[in-house]
Length: 261
Image 1 (cartoon, rainbow, N blue to C red):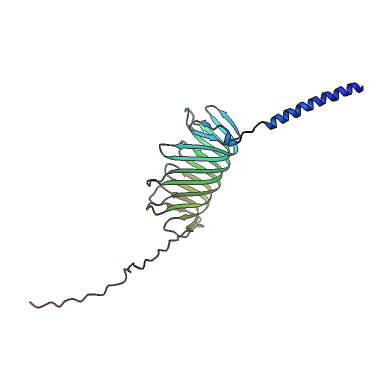
Image 2: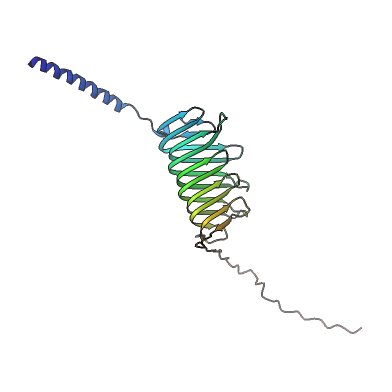
């Protein structure tokens, strides 16, 4: 009985030793970081920085990870769009081979997009954070559900500085082609231009439309409950000592006597 017991113990020892060696070898194996993983080109977007990926060819691609990114660049238009989230799923447009219809991002969503501003060398930049975002790629629309924080930045039409808007809302929708940002639900924001003080002009409302395609950024506020407010602040002009006051009247000159004929 003793001998048999010793044999069983020896067998257990060998098994345990093998398990320990296997666990040790697994722990020693190098783990790929999200940034080291090969990007996935899915249709006309690129997925990267993921920790897990699941692809249904011709239908959808799902990637996970706290730093997961999807990028869509259009070299002809000079536009760049980037979404980062915990979970991203891209869907192929039905009856197409390489065109993504939409991208759905969930969890700690961060969006950034850039496009030509219309001024030579100028760039328009839009940034936002949200709980969920949908990039309707074929429609050129970014839809965000909040709470949403946002910012827009582009050169002023006169080239003297930049026009900026930043604030918060419950929802946001950005039309990439029309360059129009619609904010909805408890909007609070501040606009800063070369003609405002550095702290900008604050405003609030239920629904706000920001048109960045016009010569100067146009802000429209729809506030049916009349709970919003607008505070317009104009930058005070520094008076030049050499400037003349248009109200100052010049002394009338002496009229020469007319000689009789």
